[in-house]
Amino acid sequence: MTTLPWWTAAVVYQIYPRSFCDSDGDGVGDLPGIRSRLDHLVRLGVDAIWLSPFYRSPMKDFGYDVSDHCDVDPVFGTLADIDALIAECHAHDIRVLVDLVPNHTSDQHEWFQASRSSLDDPKRDWYVWRDPAPDGGPPNNWVAAFRPEPAWTFDEATGQYYLHLFLPEQPDLDWANPEVVEAMHDVVRFWLDRGVDGFRIDVVHGIGKDPALADDPDEVVGIPHTALNDRPETHPHLRELRRLIDSYPGERMMVGEVYLLDTHLVAPYYGRGDELHLSFNFPPLYTPWDAERWREQIETTTGLLDPIGAWPTWVLSNHDNRRHRTRYGGSEPRARAAALLLLGLRGTPFLYAGEELGLLDAEVPPERVVDPGGRDGCRAPLPWDPTHRHGWPSEPWLPFPPEADTHSAADEWADPRSTLHLYQRSMLARRASTALRWGDQRLLTCPVGVLGWVRSHGAEQRAVLVNFTADPVDLEGTEAFGATAGWVVEVASDGAAEGTTFRGRLAGDQALWLRPR
Image (cartoon, rainbow, N blue to C red; front, side):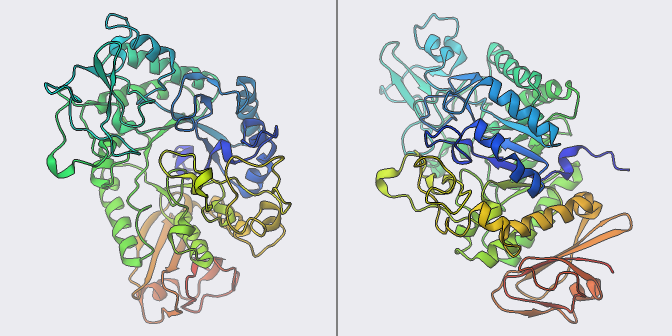
């Protein structure tokens, strides 16, 4: 009987609330809308959901500019609605993770309103304020995300600049101030006391800053400082958060958004098992559909995380990046093969709502662009049925993705050959297999263009084979076939030959899960 934490075996499903389901007809998804579609998640087989921010916000960055961490924005509902959602998820054995945004607040937050009111306000040093440089310009050369502009805004009233690694409307908190730390710990306690199972922590590597605020080197000027900030000051804060979260019963956890595009830099954020429980590792997300490049990513991740006892995460799509089907050239067979790649790897897979429908990014006309970071396409609303508004009571805040008429949830539940049924079959097979949930992973020697591995847990084994090419590949005579000869096809990305003996041939853009007979 395994004693590993629940999150090592979980499939986590990210919900971007604005785009999931609208219950009140204002064109924006909300918490009651999520509750109304829980049957979809239960039937699919998810183990946990992660909710992107639903807190009070002016919505300059669509919820990542928080004006009250301990309340629900009216566009999404009420505190009673989030309590009801948590309770109903738990009744269906689905855990709930919520976004924690600790690096910055909205400029409309009462903390910042006080901070900017005067140089002497008690909350002045809750944020990062500095005098102008000798020439009157910003204190250093850091660049903000989204726009090629300084990460500093001058405040006429007090004659100083404030730091914002994102929009000017998102001033950075100063975690060097113990009062800020305690205030954010109170936010964590507020949500843990309401029953959440953990947090996805936004831009967690940003909370520690260089006390000297030194210029970025010339060779990286122009790169947003969020992609460069990697400071030792962050790690004591993570250890304190870990102690706080671990003090609660029920295996609460935190997964960090460590947006450093090098796994060598990501690994230290696990600490010695005393910092993040999980950390996103984004280099695989940016890896093209290429067998050798993916093999390198798997080997790098394993080589860096296994020695420190850290558990990997894997993700192909999210609210900040183009959906993987779009990135992989729009090919639906390729996107289906990627599903078995993702769910078959050793670690915790994170799905993004709509991924199970095989959605593409929406094509958003200029007059409907709203996101400051150009991410509207991947945030398009989910189509629930084939009606003209796809289950939304009014025109949604963004256009629907392409193929919404044929890729709605209702259409796909009705078609056993659909991408949705593929995800359901694979997630049920994963849940039933200790090898796929916790097993070790041994890469196999395969022909060019094919990647394969065997997962083992005790006597149980499964194999994963992925053809990254558009052409059929014969594995006969390779280690991959020798290790799996006579095994049975448990799940096929194209649904072909499931339940039959594997004969050593992969179709183009096909992935298989195999089990011993």
